[in-house]
Image 1 (cartoon, one colour):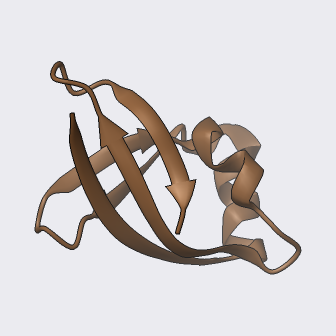
Image 2 (cartoon, rainbow, N blue to C red; image 1 turned 90 degrees about the vertical axis):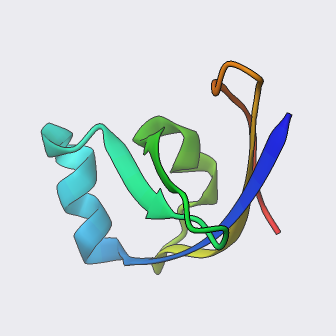
Image 3 (cartoon, helix red, strand yellow; image 1 turned 30 degrees about the vertical axis):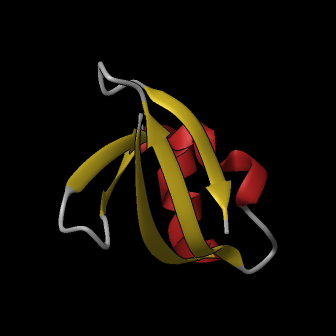
Length: 72
């Protein structure tokens, strides 16, 4: 298993564009310098009235499939 950390700060207005179907994934730069593309639907639980904000940890399997995503 591999764990990576990253921060997001996306306003509610900007997120609306994502959820209208134009974008299916977010590309994030981890604190370790790796660029990851994560399916947008995994972030729904973390969206609030102000948008999507916070520091996150993603856990990937040996085959690089997403195992867990959590806000830390």
